Image (cartoon, rainbow, N blue to C red):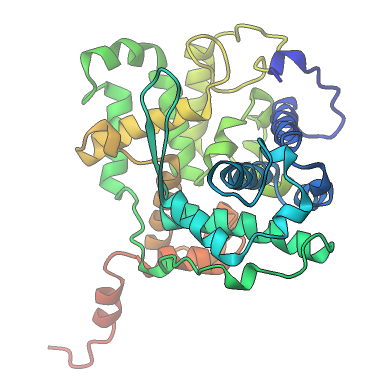
Length: 372
């Protein structure tokens, strides 16, 4: 369904653009559910009641892919499409079949008529989510008596790296300054990039400052509106995961950058009365910037700071890591940083403290017992 076909009558307190995004995601979920067997209605309700819309969409896509694989690659079912699979046929699926499916998912090729083949390669994190999706499916089927036994105990484990073993990529403070200088001066941009930069530099600088000051998630910045900001009070509202609201104080530098952008570059949306009329960050076409456009902008300027090619630039999530690491290195409490970044668990924030640069050296320096 196209966003233009939906009229929002919103009394929820959430901005219209967030309600619209949730509605479109729910529509995509409903479209996939119509492609799957009707006896899975209870499973659909379980996902709807226990997962966020985007997670629910991901699980449904995984289940559709698994059932399509059963149709295409096995003789377990006689169906020609996933919707035609019978509950009795799913009862014939064994743990080994699911393990073969997961191994298939590591690397597979999709050929399209008249076009080049596409090779898909999934890492262990992606495989673990697919395993989880299929596990929940078969646990539901067993709980509701649609299959005779719970086969999920036989699924092969998928090893994920321990979070503490993974290097946390972030910008150092001097690299943040290089990035902000690049967006202000245009230094490091190609001639083609500069033709766009002259029209978007105030917008892009405001976005980068919001990312590194508040550690916003990409979705949180993407959905910001003009009405999200109360400049008189020096604050703005963001909508976080699970529908949480948060009021954030405006720093002076961010407020100056936003004012410069709104007064100097933003202009008027292409359709002021449409869903993008209140959007804070507009594309050159006068529409709300997409998450992909924001991601590519961040990669461009972080690649200049890192001295790498554009493809090796950092994602918005790594700017979130930059905020956490910079705050902790300045001696701020990890509990305060947890609150700012909206981490569900303090152990997530502790990962940034563990990577604090030079922390061990500073601790040992404080324990110089024998002073010269």
